[in-house]
Each structure stands twice: as C-alpha cells, then as structure tokens.
Length: 305
Ligand code: NAP
Image (cartoon, rainbow, N blue to C red):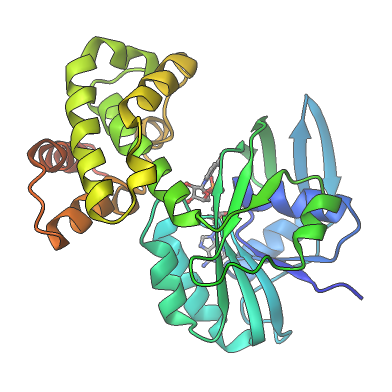
C-alpha cells in the first residue's frame, strides 16, 4: 500500500496537487481547518479542478487536524503566514521519519516550520504553476509551469518523486533549492510591490525602468552578501524579461491587495529587508520600498505583516 499523501489546505495549489495525485489513483487525505470547513467540504462532495474549461470532481476524503491517523507525508499548501501555526497543530501526528513538502512562496516560513518539527524532513518547493479559486472547493488550473523541489540539508532525492511522475506533476529535484527560492524572491521584490504602488499591470513597469534597475542592483548586492551569487546573476535582465513576458498580467500581490486579501509581504520584501539588516547591509531603496508598501497596505486597512 503506498504512503498516504496528506494535503493541508484545500486552496489553489493544495487542490491542484490533491486532485492530480487522486486522479493517478494515489491515496490522498485533505486536512481542513476545522469541523465547520469539513462539513462544508462534505456537502460539496469533493474537490473540483477546472482544466481547459473542463471540470472534474474528485471525492478526496477530508479530515480535521484532530483526526488520529499518523502522518508520514504531508504537503503544506497554505499561505506562508499560516504555515507555522498549521504545522504546530499537526506536530503530534507526525510519524517518525515523516516528510513535509512546503509549497510556500518566499522565504522565512520554511525555517519557521522546520523549527517547529525538528523530527521531520522538510522539503521546499518553488512552483511556477498557476491556479486560482473560482468558488469554494473549485480551482481553475490557469498556468502550466514547473515545480523545483529540494532539501537544503540533504541532497538525497525522496522515493515519492515517482508518485509525482505518475500524477503528471512536472517537477525536478534540485540540490540548489535555496538559490531558486532566493531568485524567485528577488524577482518578486523587484516587480510586485511596484505594481501595487503604481497601480499597474506588470507591463506598466516599463515606465519605471530606473526604479526597477536601482532595486535590482540592491537585490543583487543582497544575494551576493547572503551567499547566493548564482541567484544574483543577470537579475535585472531577467526582471525585464519577466516584465515583458507577463506585461498583461496583474502580479499576485496586486491581486491580493485589489481583493482586500492579506499579502505575503513578510516572506518576500519584508524577508529581504530583514536579512539585509542582519548583514548590516544598507539598501536604502529596498527599505524605502518596504515603508511605502507597508503604508499603502495600512491605508487600505490590510495587515502590513
Ligand atoms: P490559497 O488559495 O489561499 O489556499 C490556502 C489554503 O490554506 C486555504 O484553503 C486555507 O483554508 C488553507 N489553510 C490555511 N490555514 C490552514 C490550517 N491551519 N489548516 C487547514 N487549512 C488551512 O493559497 P494558494 O494560492 O494555494 O497559495 C499557497 C502558497 O503557494 C502561497 O505561499 C502562494 O504564494 C504559493 N503559490 C501559489 C500559486 C498559485 O497560483 N496559487 C503559485 C505559486 C506559489 P480556508 O479555505 O479555510 O481559508
């Protein structure tokens, strides 16, 4: 019998992973917040994935964190700011040798989770797949992409990569996951806050070329200082390429703010500024960007952490 995939969080990415694993015939359990969410899920009859306009529903069994079953493999698919509390509620259920896969964007939440459950192996993921919810328990697979997986403390690939293969979840194991996470974080810092502050699509940043270039230079300095020279290479070029390639899109942070949702600022720009301060690195434009963003979020009545 294959090991059960426990999936915490039935949002966009959690549903995208849970439905593909279930479709491949692999055992999956959804962990929902509480009994109220579990009842709502039961009434819906399963998770619906909409792909190329075609909706399929999968009756993945659901449970609450209080369920007694031990957890051997856990995909954590909540937002970065929820991850530490979520794992704290599950710590006592983790079996010896349990493995966690962390889908959170940015940096900071992975270390917070690992510190809560030192007995478990924590594997980080960096995903370029795109999905959004179009209703409770319904997710649209919006952008095909890729998943990089790795464990900064152990280069050995886990055996369950074959499950991802069977589920047709595009992935590759990397021994450089921190480089990938830092690079993605830097791209995010150079683009997303400015789209919020200038109230524009990604392509609108072509009109703020100098501001973007200054941020890229400071971000590259930070990456060098924290031992990530590979993540610093040609950063500005890549930022400009992403701005062009995604010109018509609104960034994820823009969408969060526009929809009055909490952002993941503390794990993106906030994390970059915190690490710079720890290294006593003076990055005035990055710090000013954070102050402007925090003020903007507060003015909209949104959490600034
Ligand atoms: P999401 O749609 O907001 O889903 C998060 C889910 O986590 C929600 O269903 C929420 O439950 C659940 N949750 C939170 N705390 C929980 C707890 N203690 N117990 C059980 N469930 C809990 O978020 P997402 O878009 O999938 O993003 C997840 C992470 O992936 C983020 O860090 C994001 O930046 C990253 N990411 C997302 C995408 C994407 O396309 N969506 C792409 C790349 C990376 P409720 O439904 O009850 O609120």
